[in-house]
Length: 351
Picture 1 (tube, helix red, strand yellow):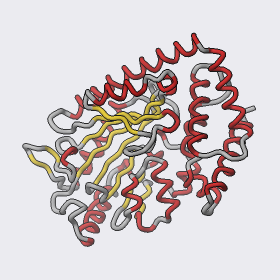
Picture 2 (cartoon, one colour):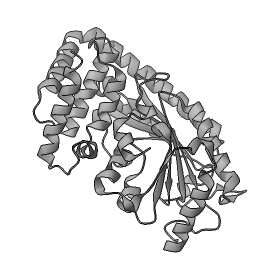
Picture 3 (tube, one colour):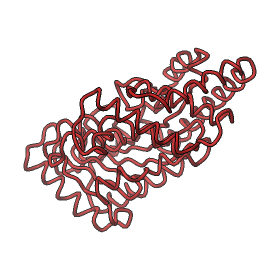
Picture 4 (cartoon, helix red, strand yellow):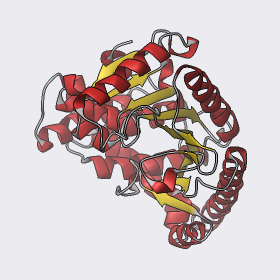
């Protein structure tokens, strides 16, 4: 697998399949782990960081899940390639923009990715399509167990897994779901729901994680507490929360469809025509229009548009993906033009 294969393919989490995939784009489990014999990355010297990379490479090479996986040294990638990995939710911004002595391992179909020497020595991530938290956690747990048989993870009987940030101590587990909530945003209920989940030990972030906006009406809902609760309980608690959010989004969709159908159909028709005919379009504008189209397809108002194609577009129209496609750096206006043309081709092929 190569970086070009990432552009040409669609990650498993973008397939638009799995339970409740009309609202839940993806389920993610992330585990933070550190190798006992090395200091945490922020305190380790260059030799120690390289030791982490070497030990990890020796460990993963004998694990079946990683046969044919792509191993990348972050310092060897150009700025577009690093940004593309961020856009695909495979690495964090910090991992990309401070690349010294850092790496990432990406499995087939992008189901598993492991950042090496980010905030912790290893950040193990598993991504699946739809509301699939339990299976996603089980796979992450298997990967963790297999790596743990080959690497001596830093662990305390009292505190659990030791991590750089105190909020990750214990299980080191963060579970999250990427949810699409256009009807709750449209009916101005999303703010109330985000406040409510905060009181229950959950948090909501934007499309690309902490510090980002909820463009396209996408929110990442995740747990905040990793200490004092079994992993299975944390996963199940988040799953129950997500199901409540799904119910509220479906209720909002039913209400909007029943009470404002003509207005909704007009908005969706205009959004589709704008995407088909625009000559320039920004990332934010495109995401918001695509969100409307996705809702229209889910409600049966817009025909012949599949979720797989729409989900792929949310990533493929990002700045680095467009520049990778063109094989060169583009100005903001050039990106807006390439984006408009790319989207237009995708939708006009459906006619």
